[in-house]
Length: 392
Image (cartoon, rainbow, N blue to C red; front, side, top):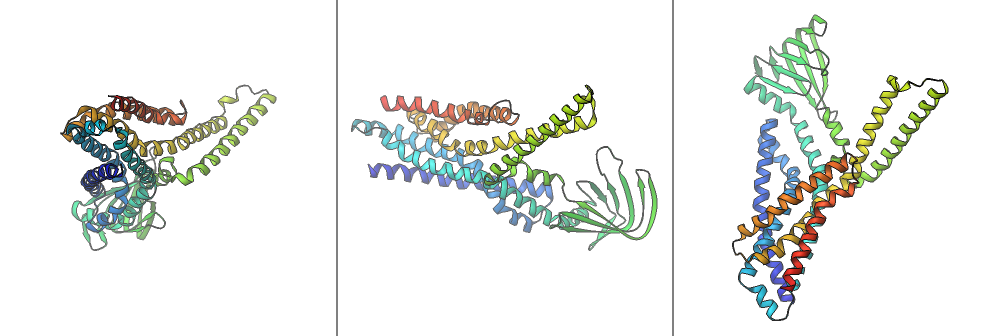
């Protein structure tokens, strides 16, 4: 029995590791190229991005490659009548399957960890590299294209000499409903501060117009801008938090919701005592209700996120639960055919169910456990096929 187990595990891991390496390399290259094109990064910045992109690439590559390895190994064994030979000796096919289930269970736990690392450490690392290289990227883009935009500002220049931007035209946009301000200057300089997450623009001898402003300024002025202010929101979102931080965040969010509900109840009580039955029209009342709605919205996402990461990681085991018995029943030595015949029902069933459960759970329409619906369906289908493999 140990010989059979070692044989299956060796075959499985060989195919899995080779296919995982190939797919991960492709996904990393695609991820790096996308970031490089979007952010105009240089070779040094691309090299710095590689370790942060790796967990993200692995978490997407592992489920597909472990299914591919399973279909390849069991499809070949079945087509070579090795399964029939084992049965003829009175040995249950489970003796060939359980080593794979044990190995894949361990790989699934690693996938859960990678799901956590990728969205917390990985994304934060990519963001940090981009911010630290923003000044260099801006100068490189301005030297080549003579224009650059980031967040709330856009800049066009006539030329670039070292760190000095000649005849710049800078447009600032504070918000969607506020007019833009345009500044034209003799020269300008950019200085990024990664620690403060800010970009400072020095402007010398120019004029400003727009938003009710029309003035000239001698000497040098500076404007400090936050770099990608939406990133601060992203770091607070449930999808970017480490799993270890989510339980305490849920408790804090529950306390916030309770405080807001008590505040609304107190305001309603005061309004009723005062005979103000139309207090719902009050702006303060509306504002508090809006904050409460956002707090509840964030609370549902916090509750859903752990289930999403665990369900995504353990999908490896669910894929194999379907792929192994199906590959045995197909008896096809062509591993690509077996893989696609196994992956197609997973693609048509698992992912739609996952997206449905995720969307409904995030909106609070269904409990967060709904995220597991796709996993449960795959395990049930795998159990039915496994029963037929063992019996027949």
